[in-house]
Image 1 (cartoon, one colour):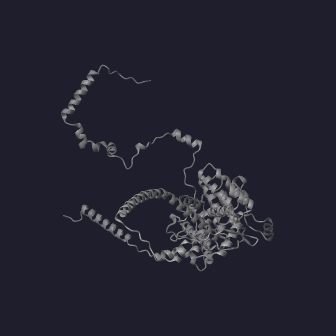
Image 2 (tube, rainbow, N blue to C red):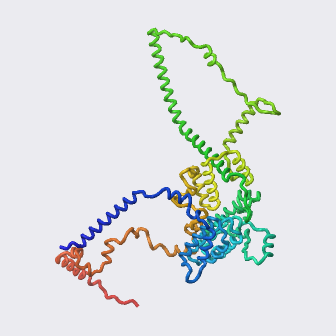
Image 3 (cartoon, helix red, strand yellow):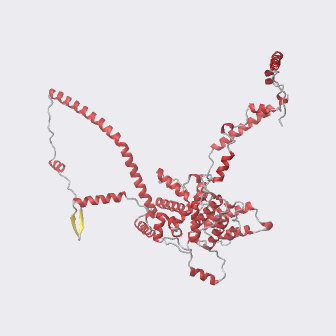
Length: 562
């Protein structure tokens, strides 16, 4: 008998598969990761340790711009663009020839255009001139934010404009006409300028679009401009905070301007965080005390009952002891000095206020008013959103000059500053923070174990400054609202498919037998049992003939209808 049978080969194959599975399971259980290397990758990304990033960026751009036989394929060109734009955004390099090159690939028909828009966002930083940014915004507006485009394209275009302006806020500030005239007189300039106010109001008008994804993108743009430069919007779109900022004359810094630090960055954020955390813990403690009040009252009642029974027992013991003749003996040998010290009463402290250099005792009414003020001050929580920029700068300077910060404080301040910048750029991060505040988890994200980017989806990811993802500019993935004609079409089409007709898996055995060829199933066991013996078959034919003879007179000749 041959050893190489099909059965044996199948058995051997199954055994090999199980062995391989067990081996993989054993290898996965072994922890061979080097945690020091992983931590160093997170703390010091390789892109930040380059020796000459400007020279490298220029050489990579020259290589990408080559055409003909030496040119990259489009897939490799996308990878090179990703590296180049991330390098420019991380080190804030000046590579002005990159932005006209990116504009060539910003067509609505372009392949992987969402990735190219993401790389464009990555390449923007505060040192980019507004003329280059205006060129990018104009190209995106012409190719994406028009009525001929679909809702998804419009939403992606608005989100890309918001992300670019968030990285370069100086692009929203219109330059002085005198400076523009001087530039024009100096020589033929090819700079692109746009009417920023009209552009901002045009994008804000998409907040009431019938497509949900476009409306969400329009609202996010409106909220962004409202916080950064609310004077660009109409009065009805500014809101309460935007109107206050407009009255205060708040606007972003122009290109080349810098705000001089008057203290440690994030000192005011740290004080606000600590004040909010202290009030949160105090309220939590008060809630716990209120929850335990009922338990304490029950315990006190039980203790009262025990004290009553204990007093009764003492009375009984005293009565019994009195009958036995116990004699009370006074203790002697006590010092008179100790008795005098015990009988002394502590002096009462009188609150005093200074008037014209003299100390005058405060009356009872004044004392009550002072206590109420202290209570009100303790209940108030510092809120930086209600303060102007000058007040925040003054507070920051005062805290930085009067407090000694520890290394943990500096780490918290860096995290708070990074979180504030992220909230300005990404509205989804603001929604996540609002959700955490409602759940009482706002203070858990600044623990020592977590990194700067504390989002659960970014766990294990190396944080690179300036990097952007396509999810930041993608349209909202929701079902689009159908218009009246589309609803009528669905109603008229009807419902051909019902849920009970569809089952999980393939067809059933009865469906398979029904579809089977008759010649294949003619002599099957099921058909033979159905037919039965010759007698039963003959009985059926006899009955059929009798029935036909009875109804013979009813059969009439059928005529064809004309």
